[in-house]
Image 1: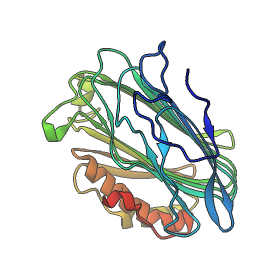
Image 2 (image 1 turned 90 degrees about the vertical axis):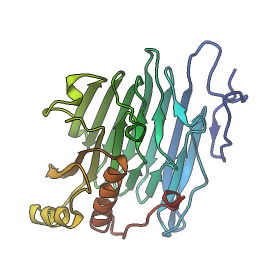
Image 3 (image 1 turned 45 degrees about the vertical axis):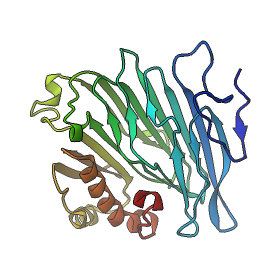
Length: 298
C-alpha cells in the first residue's frame, strides 16, 4: 500500500522502486498528483498547501523578485510512458502571485497502444496572479499523449501561461509518423468560457503535412494571457514583441484574452518568442518587469 499523502511539509523525491512510488500492483503506470496552494504572508507569496501522491514534486520556493514565489515543478522519472496519469493542481488565493516553471523538457515515450495522460488545473481567485511557464513537451514517435489544461479565473484574477509541443525529435531526424496527440485547453472567468478548444493529431496523417494543418512543421505552441487593455494598446504590445525567428506566429485579443500561436520547426524558437511576448506583457498585466527563472540558465 502507498503511504498517506503528504501535506504542509517538504516533499522528498521517490524513485520507481521507492516505498512511496505512486503505483500499486494493480496499476500499470504512475498515478501522480500534486496540489499547491499559494497565499500572501508577511509581504511575499508562499505555498501554504502542498499535497502529493507519487513522483510529482516541487523544489523549495524561491523569491528572486521579493513578493513573487518562483516554483520548479519536478517529475523525477523524467519521462512519461503509457498508463501514466499525472495531475497538477494550483490554487492562488487573493493577493498571491506565483510563477511555476520546469527544469527541462517533458517527454512522452513510445507506446504499444496505451495512452499517457497529463491534466493541469489552475484556479486563480479574485486579486491573485499566476504564471505558468513550462519548457516544451516532446512527443516521441509512437507516443499516445493526452494533455489537458484548465484555467479558472475569478473576478480580477490574472493569468499568463503557455504550452509548447514538439511532435517527434527533429534534431534526431525523427518524425511523428505514428502515435496520437489529444490536447485540450480551456479558460473561463466567473463561469463564462473565454476559450475552449481541442486538438487531435494522428501520427503520419495528412493533418501533419496539409496546408490546413501542421504544414509539415513539428512544433505547435499557444500562449494565453488575460488582457484588460484597449485594441490600440494591444496592437502596440504585439508590435513590440516582434516576430518569431523561424516559423509562423500570430497574436489576437478576444474577450479580454490575448492568444499567441506559433507553428514552426524548433521548440526553442517558440520559447524565445514567447519569452519576448512575456517580457512585453508582464509590466502591463502584472505590474512587474520580467524576471527570468534561474533554472533556465542551467
